[in-house]
Length: 363
Image 1 (tube, rainbow, N blue to C red):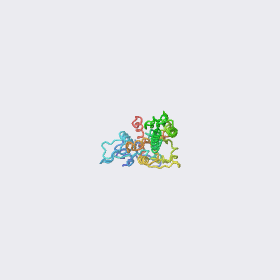
Image 2: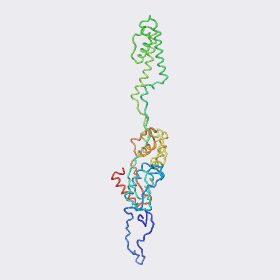
Image 3: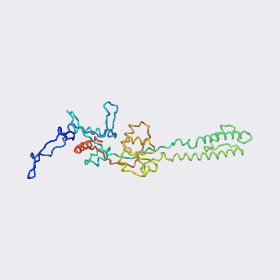
């Protein structure tokens, strides 16, 4: 079926009369006794091209369009496209061909059920590592704690009280009959002494007057309360957590009321949990876009898919930074190229992919 003119790319075009069976009394025999052990697959497939069957699907980094504005149609690129170019160079011969036949293959990641229905096994040239992606926890505004310990109204009240106590001390000290009162006749001197009390440094030359000392003692008690509360909050600045709590395990998702977004039906069926809300979007791109635009969602995907979509669809600082679960990884998700109808070619292509992997081209 792969040798013209009898067949083209696995499709029969002419029947070949290899031999004729003659029935007789002894049971029968072939006339020519021909050898039926024919070479079903030639070394080079004449006028055949192996291509991806999912042309309307985009599954980066394996298969995606890079130019949709061209007059000749979109241009495709990806890992599968480049691997198929190597495979065609190895087993296809398209010189002097008026008509090209096409043999279609499918990446098993786009059709996981095909691996169960087909008898042949695709060569696992790549392994996907799935994990959860959630928004990275934010950081506390630590340097602003020096001003946000109290609200603006309390700060204004404190400085107004500081000015008023200085004025009261200046007014009481206006009498020259009070001992040491001459030092407090200057309003700046009164402000500095009141401020030094707040800083815990004390004051010198306190006038020997009962009214003055009552006012001064009241100010000491007030500033002691304010400074104690302030110092307590500032001390917590040095011991408090830098970041908010970071979700880092699937067990934390239900407690935080998260919804898991899957980009693979098989993964959703495998990991389905009644306690954890989940949805499945059968498109890597659409699942990514839904997850980053919906709060409190965790995307279950691969790091390759996530980074590709982030570079392609998002500008710098357009989306928050995301965190991949550190201690969770769903590996051993091998994928390969599987023929839709041509099982005879599977071993041949598997051999080519194995040689490419040995040479390091696949990776």
